[in-house]
Image (cartoon, rainbow, N blue to C red; front, side, top):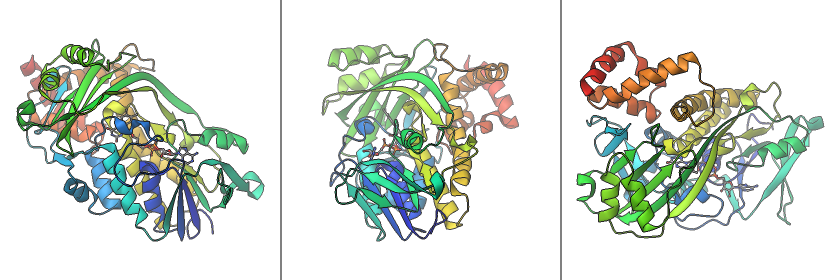
Length: 440
Ligand SMILES: Cc1cc2nc3c(=O)[nH]c(=O)nc-3n(C[C@H](O)[C@H](O)[C@H](O)COP(=O)(O)OP(=O)(O)OC[C@H]3O[C@@H](n4cnc5c(N)ncnc54)[C@H](O)[C@@H]3O)c2cc1C
């Protein structure tokens, strides 16, 4: 029994990345045990170990597709439980640089569902798998190694009845700031290189009662921050006939948590839709603030030597500026990679996994960091090519306000259904040139 399958796999963390990894491994491992430090709610509810669960979350189109592949019918179940399917181009007003992109039916679907509802449904489905056991209230505290320190053979826990758990594969899905790196150092493994972009994002989320006449009947709104105005906001129609509204600032621009302050923040945005919604809709709870200091990525794919039998996934491997909504979708894509590699009984699983995951992460990271680096206050390397591309994309965004085809391609990239290169496809260059002149 080894990391090519057939034995016991232990996953640390029963949030999105951990549950999906457990689902992936359940196909080839005899037993999968998921250790979770929190006690787990029986229904959809926020919890301590996932502080972001009170903040606005959106499941991107690619993420919804992958969830349905791993757990067939999951998005139908979510919709049956009140989640809203929305077309990001026609049901949502999407403001780029203060102007709405051209509306048209896009054929894409985004899911308006709260983070606790999504996690609840995923957890229920994973709990039903006969060879998966979720053990709440167990804190994993370190690794057990063998073969002279070359392989992981299990985890140490805080549980008095099972302080050591033997495993053929240990997956760390313990989230951002996870102790995966400390665990590696403890067993004498050098930590990988890190990329970090200090974005200093602050979110304030609050729920309001949804009424059909709000936002002229649309189901979503996104006002993307732009250079000079590093603040934005979003509203999404969710389960429970509610709007989940988020105000967010970058580079430390902090949305307030009192009614008057929130309104003043919304009034200061380049368009007034969100302020109008806040004035019309009835608040259902108190606003909740959360700080997110930096996007962070660990480059395991560049390491020459890997600990056999150990993987890091989800936010612990890479966490993205949340305003682009990529985290759950990338975690799902990593689970799909894990499923395919373990199905194929791939040897050298860690090296193959990190190399394939790096491609999925690269696409999302390039997009989010590329957008972050539009803000001169954010530190990062900008090459001459980046600057040329940035000025093309400025024109692209402008042209997308009058050209629905450009708007659709932009959304396909943002929804992770197409690579960023789709925006520089030959047919699009001329459209960008013409469209940006027309829009001016
Ligand atoms: C403000 C904000 C908004 C976001 N919005 C979006 C969005 O719109 N769309 C989107 O796709 N993503 C969004 N994200 C990102 C998304 O929340 C994460 O990418 C997603 O939850 C996957 O995270 P994860 O499972 O890797 O880790 P987490 O969700 O952080 O979960 C880690 C789990 O591990 C457990 N754990 C930790 N240590 C241990 C231990 N030692 N032993 C046992 N258990 C342990 C924790 O209790 C927790 O359950 C947002 C993030 C933030 C901060």
